[in-house]
Length: 555
Image (cartoon, one colour):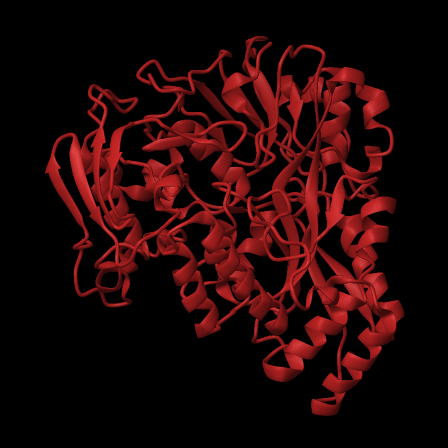
């Protein structure tokens, strides 16, 4: 899954109301206003006359060019998933269905023979073949390409040789093209999740043209999904991305609208005002300022649904006082200094629930009573004791800072968390706003952020192992908290190789029990999505992960 900008998908949406720049979106739609560095809305410029049948939805500036294997955050991911089609796709309930795949055959969850359907094409008219998948996976895995989603190919035989800093091979030996419609995959060990994962973005195919200039391709991608970029280009940075239906697509997600415009907001308060005035068709995150009234405001246009999203506090090992045993004790103390129940009720009006593990409460196999999970309970006296134990190792100095992105609407949450830490532990603690999600992600990826940071995960496919392996495998590129426990890695592997889901759930519980003991990071809340549609929209439903079922939005 993906890092999320906002509170909706994993982590970030409590609007900076005091600083939010407000303006009339009707004017913005005709006058090209761009305030990319402000804390307001990155306006939707357009000297174009927008077709009223185009669905406008909230979005944000993607962190990177739109290459599937290098897109690991929500704002880019929601677009990539519209532009590309994988072997499978997920419906609104998270059920996987064959998309480009005709047959996926295995007898042991280890050796796979995959046959794709005939006559699939990319939006430029070139054929989608078995080689389109194999080449894209090998590109994503190759260490010198430094793709953020490379970890997903770890189970495939030969990944280590390809992913090394100095690769010993250019292609994974576990991938073989048989013919134009058939390829085989050999895994190092059985994986109970592998087939379901094949609808996840890093497993999408790429056309041959992508490799000529991958960065340029990402600015104007050619995919095989239900939508495509328009011929004149669709991405106006920090402003909007326009998608139109792709006539070459003939899978199970055919659009029921004439296109999508992702409008890049930096304030969910502004987006909500646009939704109410009819200048935005669908908003997937209601700002905290409106949570107490949005159901009354919107009536039957208000949408709520428990979703597979969470929000955590992470801190990297290079931050003073947060490595080794001292760091473990400080994370435990801070966790017990946070009153999650009060935050969920007072700030979010029940649209968040206190976290009880490192995944999400809606996922199959979730267990909210794991050994040690009392560390997620508010316990100020115990928090003080544990903090004192850390001080005995190395006396605290400085202040505790938590970075959050202003464009995600997180101000109220992280100010409440910082105040709780301050009042309980008696230290200086503040929430530090960053202008955009991209600002934080760039520093986190570079290990230069130097403070705690808000982050979360929105599922890419609905299993606990997808959440855990992506973020806490020691070798994962998306392990942003430097978590490294060989025993947990072993248990992840064992859970993936389990013969049944029930057995896998038991092993996942063992792994998470160790993670709680290590305090891998600080889980805060899981999501009950609060969203809305305008009176111009007749149908808009949230999917299992909290994103809209975009293809099925109808006006």
